[in-house]
Structures are given as C-alpha cells and as structure tokens.
Length: 347
Image 1 (cartoon, rainbow, N blue to C red):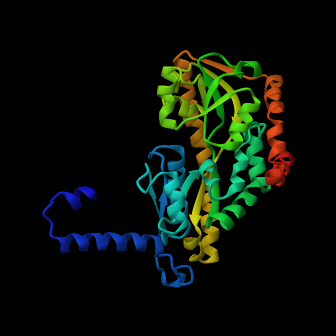
Image 2 (image 1 turned 60 degrees about the vertical axis):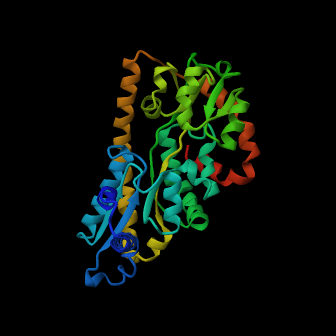
Image 3 (image 1 turned 45 degrees about the horizontal axis):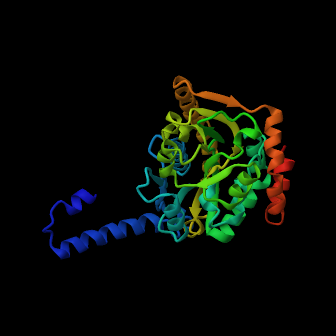
C-alpha cells in the first residue's frame, strides 16, 4: 500500500487526500462494520474484524489465529470474517493492546506480561514456581483462574478475554551450569523489568539485571550478564544458545499469551455471535498448544545438535528453589491471595 501511495512524489494534494480518506474509511469500516450487525443478522450483513498479531506468519499463535478465523467464518457461513494481520503490521504487543482498547483494532494477542499494565491481576503469572507443570497451569486457568483474569481485563482494560495461548516455560540459561540453588548465587541474570520477578530473583541470591530483549545477546558476549531466562524457542531464535551453552529446565515461569477483543466491538455483536466467537477462540487453544509443542521440539533439537548441555532439576532441587521465593508470595498475598488459592486448588 505504501509503495503504491508514495511511488510518485508529484501526486496532487487533492488526490493524495482522497486516497488517505479512502484508507481511513476502509479501516473504520473494518473495525465498526459490526455495528448492529448481530441485530440485523437476517439481512445477512457481513462483519469484518481485524486481528493484530506481533509474531511472524508461521508462529504457533499466528497459525492458531488463522484457525480461529476459519472456524468463525465456517460457523457463520461467511457472515463474520476475521482478517489476521501478523508480523506487527498493526503494531507491537503494547500498541495492539492500546489500539484494541479504543476500538481502532477489533482483536489482538499479547503476552500476559504487558497486559499487567492494564489489568493488574495478570501479574500473578510473574511469581516463579507458581505452577507444578503445564497441566497444572491449564487446570487452574480452566478451573476459575481464567474467568477471574478475564473479569479483571474487562473491568480495567476495556477488553474481552477470549482465549489463552501457550508460551512455554521460562528456564535458566547461562555460561556455567545451573543444577542447584547455590549455582545461581551472585550470578547476573537478565530478567524482565518486573518488580515481582526482581524481588523473587533476589530471594534466590541472583543479581537480577533488567535489560531489553535486544540487548541480551551483546550483554552475554561482553560478559555484562552471566545468563538469562526464557523459553527454549526464544533461547534459540535470539541466538543466546550460541553463547550461554547451559540450559536448565527449571520451568520457573509460565506466562501465557492472551487472545482478546475490543469491548466496543464486542458490544456491537449479538449474544449469538458472541457465543460463536468465544467457542471458536476456545477451540483454537488446542490447535495452538499442539503447534507450540512442535515449535518447541524443533528448537530443542537445535540446542542438542549444537552440543549444549540440557540440565533437568531434581524434584528436591526444584523444591529448594520454590521454598526460597516463598517470602515474595507472602509480600503480595493481599493482592493475589484469592488467585493463589485457585491455583493451589487446581493441583
């Protein structure tokens, strides 16, 4: 679109204004064409919804969103169409959240981390060793945690939660092996800028070093940090496995992605269409999980082919890590105690 608009610099201002006006109208129609559509379903009025995804086209989340769009279109006989814009075409995750809040974008997907800025209860995912396993996380989400978080998202963020997408488990990786609690003491580990996580890592004896994702590779190279923590896919994709060759499957954090919709766009749908959207989103969860498993398996193969050391924590060592961060749970109990209970009950 940009190439066609700006190919000729000598385009008259009136023509350029008209082109911009058309683009603006098209965008407006895309995000507001659902107005009254549910109530006028008999007339066959079509609804076009735009979904923003920051990840690339073949990423598990992007693929799941396309599956979601396919299901919606099938269940409505083509009456509702979801256009999925991948690779950050409509903005990064934070921009997607903000633009969906005000209704410029109809739908989006973001990690639960940045969503904490808009709905504070999503901060519960920042507590290390919160879940015993992946199954435990999903049992908690389906057992009431998801409902509580979506309620908070709608009340505070003007967003309607549709589904949770797997983002794997975050693990330690470093230049020196980490297999026991004592191995992290004094180590400079890159962490996200997150107060809860920083507090927890300090309890572990780590020297938490907040850095942007783009700074980690060079920081590892220069010895500014000793390691980092992330899922295996990012560990490989960002090239950190080339320098920090010890990968410890600590699985200390599980921070899922969230598929959401603008409340403004949601309220324009009929209750029947809302049910279709919700059901399709839920159905896409399993598709995404399967796709993410394959994606992670491919990344782990690359780690092993590289000859990196993959370390699994013993049950006893994992418990030692978990016990060490308990003071952080106590510190935030008033804020997250109700969610901790839901999670504990799901074990």
